[in-house]
Image 1 (tube, helix red, strand yellow):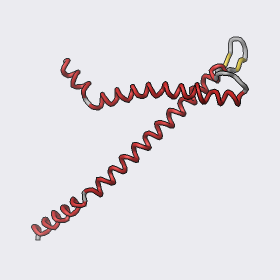
Image 2 (tube, one colour; image 1 turned 45 degrees about the vertical axis):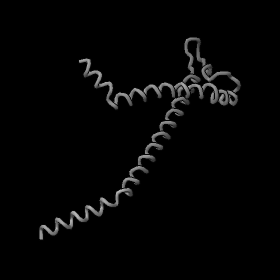
Image 3 (cartoon, one colour; image 1 turned 90 degrees about the vertical axis):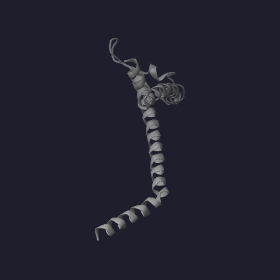
Image 4 (cartoon, one colour; image 1 turned 120 degrees about the vertical axis):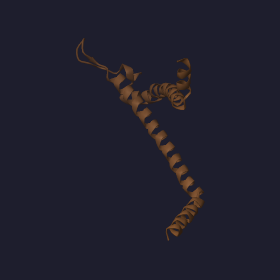
Length: 126
């Protein structure tokens, strides 16, 4: 059972997933820092001088308070993360598309060999 677990863990997919989760966690910290330390102060400047978006709230009664600043912070974090993931996927797709084009261009001999094969098969049938 231990050897099966070792085999499972050492497969490429599991290791790739682990690396992705770790990098994703680190990236989340960077995005939160970007939002809290750069974007929030800019928004704060235009919204009336509140020093932190987290503190923006709408107090209806003592018991009912809407903390829209925290929500706004989370929305900004999500949008930044989603945009960076979009750019990353777009970049990877472009690289993969370029590699496929190079593979097709790199093997013109395969087309010639396929034509020869087809001609030989046609001669056998005739």
